[in-house]
Structures are given as structure tokens and as C-alpha cells.
Image 1 (tube, one colour):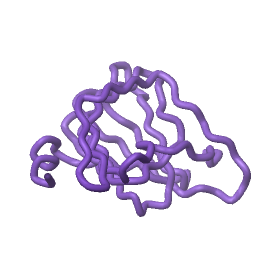
Image 2: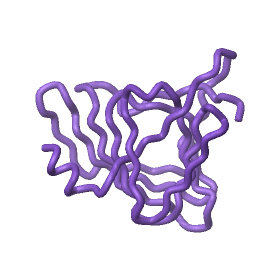
Image 3: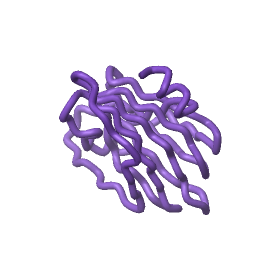
Length: 140
């Protein structure tokens, strides 16, 4: 199974950031579409491959994931902001990312470019749990 994920995707997506103690509200994403390519369950883990497209100016909204997330940027440049308000990374076509479930920080994915960002994303999450959960806006 691990070999299939490694071979199927070149890497891993991790979007993370620290939540603040001040009250805040979740931020909805916009300009994002996601299509399930395949999914299966093995014992207590759901494996899902999704193609995610972020239009220019689009954002995922602040969120975190309950399981491992692996992603490969197929097209465009993904800007990844973390809720510590200091960490910003850019992932270009052909680059990969990973997010571990023990990462306490929330994150936001954005398309600041002029062409769509297309991601191939594999989620390995606890069975029956949503792939992501909204997180408060840290005020960055």
C-alpha cells in the first residue's frame, strides 16, 4: 500500500499553521474544485485520491487534516501559508508536499498566479472522518 502511494504520487502535501488563542471564525474557501479519482478503505483507514483545482485568486480557507496528506503540484504555483503568520512556502509544478496529522498548525492554500493550480492529493485518514476541518482565521 505504501509503495502504491509513493509510486502513484511523487510526494506529499503538508499545509500547517498554529491556531491563536483569540476568538476567530473559520474562513470559507473560494475558487476551489475537488474531484474524487478513487478511494478505498483498508482496516481503519480511508485512502482517497482527489484532483484539486484552485483558480487564480482562489483559496482553500484555513483548515487542518486529521490524517496524512500527500500532494503533488501538477500545474501552477501553490502558495501555502501557515497560521503562525510567518511561514509562507511556494510549491511549483512538479514539487510535492506532505502534512502529518500530528501537525498542530492550520494552513491555507492559495493561487496567487494567473493560471490554475492543479494538485493530485492522497489522504490517509481515519475511517469515516472528514478529510479536513475548518480552522479559525489567525488574522494574518
